[in-house]
Structures are given as structure tokens and as C-alpha cells.
Length: 221
Image 1 (cartoon, helix red, strand yellow):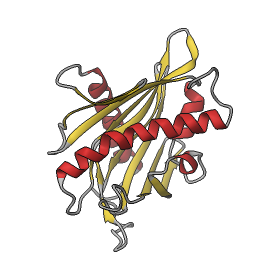
Image 2: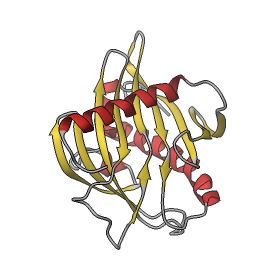
Image 3: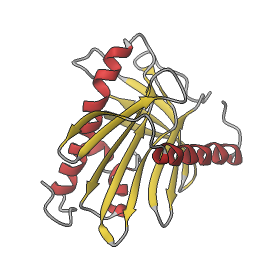
Image 4: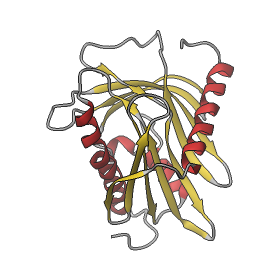
């Protein structure tokens, strides 16, 4: 897909948001890939490509708005400070406050066995009475060709959903949906081994950052 107009990207972004809701509501065939304290990582065969779709859940003792501010990927957001998987963020085009095209750089992983990647995504923010979310999907964007120093990856519909908990305004159920195709020559088995602990580390680091910044509303050890 190439860069056309705002309407086309909006339709694509809304389709991604709808798919994420379908994934969340799907109760069949999920397997527990990893469980650590109150973090659970599930996986199943992806409906988009030959890899896996991962879903992780954790309840965080902070309001949805606060959690969203820490996870929403912007170059000046707290995300780069605490998410050690991210090496950089670049805004390629901003349509409005809820829709943009961004390039994300990731660090190497698995002791260098997985080299640094970059992803070019349409990112869409959603805010309603049930949740706040940042949704993403990769696109082909002619103004940002691949670079020799990064392997170009591809994010199939993915997102971070800050679910509002009824009668608990100071708590958030954070759901992480991810199904990346890392590209390159990485063996599938290595990717499948690396993903669950990487997702677990995402939650641990986020919670630690919120605690360090005094954003938690109660003890969350």
C-alpha cells in the first residue's frame, strides 16, 4: 500500500481496531505461552500470516489515561525511556491527533541473534467508554524505504488496549495484541521462544516505570 489520502488510512486503521476487538473476544484455541505472577501471555495461530498471534493481559494499579500516556508511541513520550525493546521513533506523517504514520526502530534481541529491526506503521488512537487503545499495522510507504542497517519487519494488526474496569477508575486491564513478522532469516523457533519473555518484560518494565514515577495508585509489587 502506498500513501494516498487521509480517508484511506482512516479506513485501514478502523479495520485494525475492529480486528483487535475480534481477537479479544475470541475465546477459542488460545494456549498459555507464559505466566508470571499476574502477567499471562497467550498465543494461537495467526489469522494473518504463518506465525503466531500473541495476547497478553495484566491489571495495573493506575488509571487508563495514565497507562495510555506511558504506552502511546510518540518520539517525546515516556515509552522510549522504559521500553528497552524500542531504540527510536520517528513520525513520518501526522494526519491528526489520532492518526499518524510512524517508523519504529527496535534493538537487537536474543544476545544479538535477532538483529535490529524497523517497522513503518499506521498508528491509530481510540478512546471510548470501554477502553483507550493504540492500534497499528504496517504499510509500504514509498517515502521511507528500507535501510541497510535495519531489517524491515512487518506488524500485522496489533495494539495495546487499556480496558476500563467497572467501578475501578484507578485500575487498568492492559491487553497487548501482537503478531510481528520479523523478516530476514530468523528461524521461526527462535522467534517463538523470544516473544513470550519479551512481552513479559514489557509489562514488568512498564509497571516499574509507573512505580518509579509515582503513578501507581496503590501497592503493586
